Every structure is written in structure tokens, then in C-alpha cells.
Length: 94
Image (cartoon, rainbow, N blue to C red):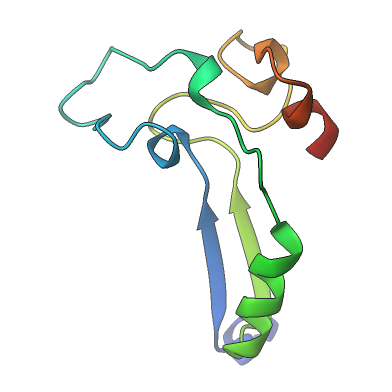
């Protein structure tokens, strides 16, 4: 009931397509961009939340695993994640 009462929420899908728009997981099934393309140099998640609140959102969800297979957390399940990303920026936002 609480979820239904929230009325408006947002889902943030922050995946490799943001950095490689040509990648289409349906077309390129089984082929994945190199993890190094994930490079959020100017990431401002506070701005995301401020915008969501301004729109009336009562909750926000960050999708951490996508169809690309890339994980937004340093998982031990596989190597295709921010764990193996070469950039310091990604590790700093974790």
C-alpha cells in the first residue's frame, strides 16, 4: 500500500548505452562494449534526485544490472563490472 501511495517514482537506467549509443543489446546480443567505455566524468546523482523530487517523485531506483551484462557494483560474480573499470572516477562514486 505504501508503494501505491507513493504515486510517482523514477527509475534510473545508467548503462553502457549512455557512453556508447551505437550499442543495441537486442541487435548485439552476446557482444558487449569494453567496460572502459563506462566513463562518468561529470556524474551528478544529486541533480538526478533534485530533478526527480521537483517532478513529484517519492522514490528513486537505480538499475544496477542491465541487459548489457554490465554491473554498477564491484561484483564477484563476473568481471564485467565497475570492479574492472580502469578509471578512478567510477571507484570514487561507489
